[in-house]
Image (cartoon, rainbow, N blue to C red):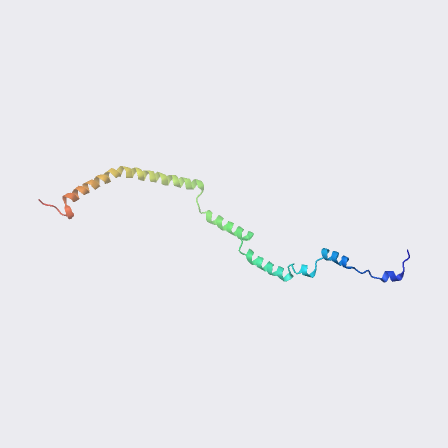
Length: 128
């Protein structure tokens, strides 16, 4: 085969079939319009930053943890709490026992008051 200078300068021309194949491989201007622009990405980034301010950061959680530690250090331990509850339940038991002992006296008082009210209507002595 003989190679001449004119052939080296000659450009190959794409035909319609070649162009159709390239359209399937590469994006067209119309295809590129569907992608986000730099401005779209910038706007989205700004929106996300604003949204993310609603959520706690690691720093926020650490700060909250320190505040909670400070608050709960004043609370009693479990042993102290149950000891305190034992004392309260003992007092409650004593109160109930005292009430049970005094209940008949109160009932007796009510009967006596009713009798007195019958004898003294309208809070005055009834003389025969």
